[in-house]
Structure formats: C-alpha cells, structure tokens
Image (tube, rainbow, N blue to C red; front, side, top):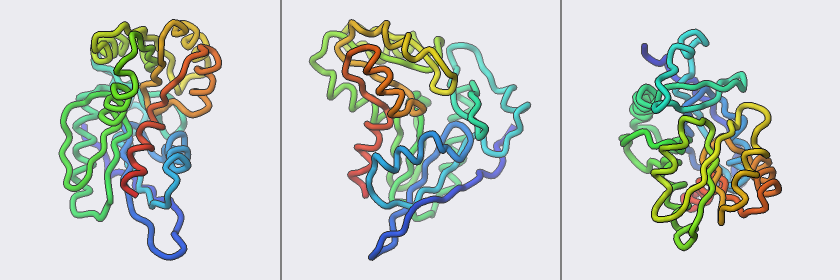
Length: 236
C-alpha cells in the first residue's frame, strides 16, 4: 500500500513589512492538525507560513484499520475526524520519508516531524527537526539531577520502551492516557505524584491537558509541544 499524494494545507499570517518564512509540519496522522498547529503557532510567537502534510492523508478508514501492528510496534495518531488511530511505526517511518522526499527543492526554513516516537533516521535537505530529538534532549537537560521522572504516554504498549529510554540512572514512573480519547488523564496524573518532574511524551497533549496533569499531581509538568516550540522559535 502506498500513501496518496499528501494534502498540503497552508496557513499563516503575513508580516507587515516582509513575507513570512515557510515551514513544513509533518504529522503521522491526517491533516489538518487543528489540535496541534494553532497552539504551536501561539507558542512560537512568530509569523510563519505553515504547510501541513500527513502520512495518512488520502487513505480511507478501511485501509488505515489494516495498519495496526503488534504491541511493540504501535504508534497512536489522530485522523482528520478527530478519531484516534493506532498504526505501525515502521510503515509510518516509510511514509514520512516519502513526504520529505516530495519536499526536495522547496523553500522551507525548516521541516518539523510532529512525533515524539523514535522511528529511526530520516533524510532531508536543509534543516530537519524531529520532535522526539528535541523533547529527549530538553527533558535530559532539565531533569539531569533529578532522582525520579514521571512519564505519560498514549498507549500501554509504549510503557516499557519509555522506561528504558528515560531511565538514565533514575527511577522512572510511567503511565498511559491517550490525548485523543476522553477521560483517564487526571487519574493517570495522580499515579505520578511521587515523581520529581512529569513529562507528557506525545505531541497530541495540549496545554489544557498539561494544566490538568499539573493540578492533579501537584508536580511540575513538561509538555512535548512546549519543548518543540522553544526550539522552533530560534529559527524564526
């Protein structure tokens, strides 16, 4: 199965004195990502024209339903309808690379892959930002002297991998709650009250969700999209 030509959605304001820079935001799901892009734009705080591309754009629901893999290869993402989809990491990586290849020669100040899962190396000309790298480095810089770390991920099948990735000589307490399914986030947060710091390790978690987790846990909370926005601001 191959992905249909991506649905490119461009949005953004025009600067008063000059044309804004262009950036490509690439999602593992379907565009438009109105659950991510508007909030990221506010966090970035700069005028930028954003072109959205999705690895599942153009695929009908029946084809997407066939992509669900074994537990240790699961990745959760969002469809255009707002529904959750669970797909295979290897298949998604291939589709992301195809989208990046299609952008060769385009005038983008950077390309941003909106996924905190480690999918393997991706190739692109120019500046390529991968959310998982930005989040991982940001968390380690902030939590370097902490003895415990709480992590929230979307799927139960992701817990073991996150524990290995985040351990770094510290105690890791991991729980799961999907950003695309109602309920569960507050209860998940309560299980992390003993952590020194909590990380919401998915680009689907919103600022409102971060506030819910902070209030329920009483702990400081890092939001993946905040860490990504902080890096993007340096390029605009």
